[in-house]
Image (cartoon, rainbow, N blue to C red; front, side, top):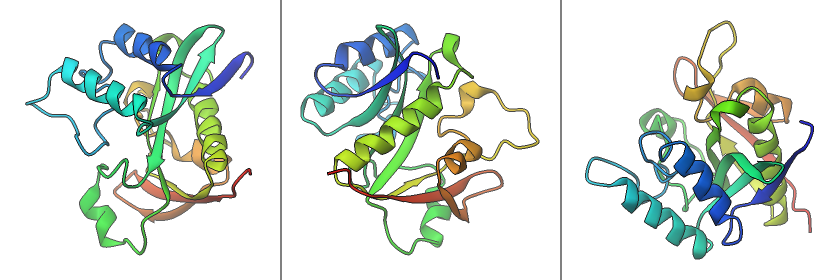
Length: 192
């Protein structure tokens, strides 16, 4: 991962995050990484509204992400947060069918700048998110990655990362959500 370093998303890093999102057309059609928050995104929301809601959440400490920097430039992130911060997830019907208990934390979204894909940004972001979760008290962490083994898949569509990346960091498959998506979990001890 060379010179990559990770910082938490907060008021001081908001301009770096915003610059990356703006340089990538708002990310996924102007989502601004709001799709998993309670407000969500949709046809009635504008890109400007998504940006404003995300900034408001960040300034209030209600949005978490591990931002990856290559030198002075933010080149990617991993969104995470407590379950109540990120209540909206994909494959929700399948998820609820096998639900026994909600996790303390969810990891819901990754993004890497086009020029930095396949360069370790997502892995660095995931490691940074786990370190930040440990700093914030730890607990059960859950995510919903895609198994791409034996398939050709564009990295630009892997919004929740790969199963192999999570397993390399000690996550275990809990249950299947669909043909290629899994629920994975890991208990992260507090760092304090």
